Length: 465
Image (cartoon, rainbow, N blue to C red; front, side, top):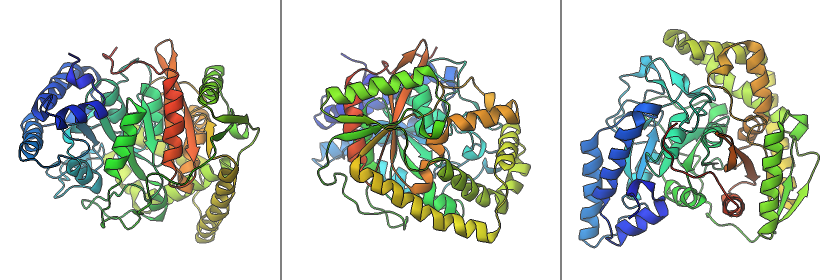
């Protein structure tokens, strides 16, 4: 019999609902896997086995009473440590928030519980969730299970490393500048950044975000299979009035032509040959599944979107976050914030307002483009996953890294959905591609991703290197 921690969420939930296995058995297997491999990667920074088993017992009791246990019945999942989970500190990787204990659940946690998921543990993030790498002065560094010499990604690096290693079938992540898509890419799994308003989220433990983060920050699932992304999205998307941005959009939209645009190097961004080859391979897989894929030289603007994204994001940080960064005194956060400030001067009020106005025109351009091409195939990153912590070595090195991440940073400004699909390995190093679609068309992304996944993805879960 396949070890339960190896099963995808779709299969495990079906077995639990059908009483082939119990939720307690699934939880015990997941806890054993966590204890076996987490010391090598430090992906989960807090968990309580008794709480995990009690949640699993509640699922089994509901099934015994003849009740519907939910679409994620008994599936072990992880929660990023920047989301409120009742009774646990929402540290966001910070010593200054080590005692910031949540009195209630973030809607993402509440929705997972209502769907019957069993929360296995809390996953690591860089300080302030500010990097494409995962290390902080409170919880330490997370290592990539495929190759400890490369980044596990960030800021949802703990979620990606845990999921790739079989610590939970689905990981919760957040994304304001690639923080779901890049960790999935770096760890060789899949990650979905949903449309703004698709998944409700809110932390009562902290103040509401400023307008930039409100427009750009989302929660979403990471998983080893596209089917599990689909299931996780359905569970996480349930309504919650506490998030005014939540939108009751259907998970499946109108019929669309299976047509995609392929752009290897948007706006001339640097792209290594291995990434270009992965994109051509993914395009071939789509064509084999009946899609029309047309290579294009240009897309609607991304560079300008990335500049406005950074301006809006840093405007929030400059209004109070910079003082928190100084208090925390995390060396990585100090370095990265300093490098970001060099790349993005502070705006005046008119520049800020002009940026918000320009956002509308940029989004209009993209939505018009999607009328012809329902999906766009582009890099997740122009480079293979970086050597770990290479972003804090110099300002010049940081700028080079940012240039290769254009396709991650540009999209959040527009609130569009993006999906990172793992396609293969270059030695021990993962590679993959990104799919982008119009608002609330995650169904388009998932359908295209399933066609790419069927052509071959790196085997997982894996034993950490």
